[in-house]
Image (cartoon, rainbow, N blue to C red; front, side, top):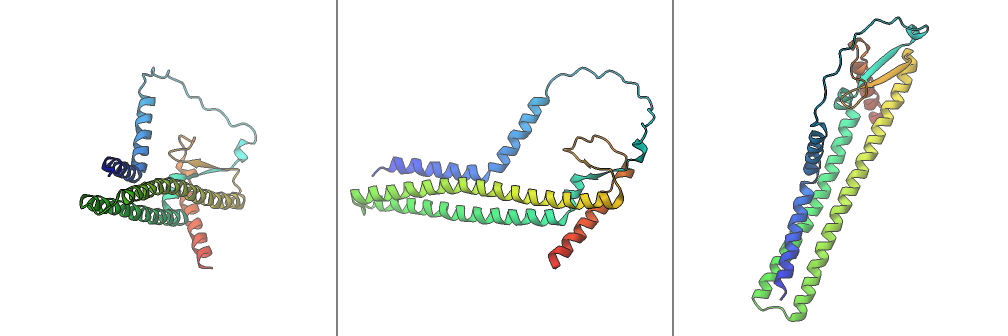
Length: 218
């Protein structure tokens, strides 16, 4: 009986299961470490710059500008919140299926070892069982890859739908209120500072949620 081969197979299975369950955490950790390394450089003090008041050009005073805090928007927009819950539920379902297959592989291996020790298997039965266990291991690894791809696709679809819903609403909102620009303000935006009086986030969130509730109930 080729016990060392099967033992190695189970070791690979165990590492695969651990790798899948920790996949997201490890990726996040790598990103954080990368960010730390990229910013760990010495930078000279910025020269002092005198700020002068500049009179607006002709026509600029006619512009109406507002901004939306996207961090707040995504934290309070019910459509996005519900969508995230759905994808998380879908991913939990996939993980349960994966764990069930992993448990089955472990049980089949333990049965094989027990029968082998008891001398219950012929040489051909040992070979057939080892081949079956190897196929189960391959199927489990393929399932892991499929789960990662499916989760990524689902999240991209949800992100696209939520973004499109927000953009469509803001296009109408801008025209309705006579704004020239509606800017994005948040941790990942290029707008570094803004006057709070131009912040329309609260009204936008309230109206988006009202629209979402109406569409969901009709």
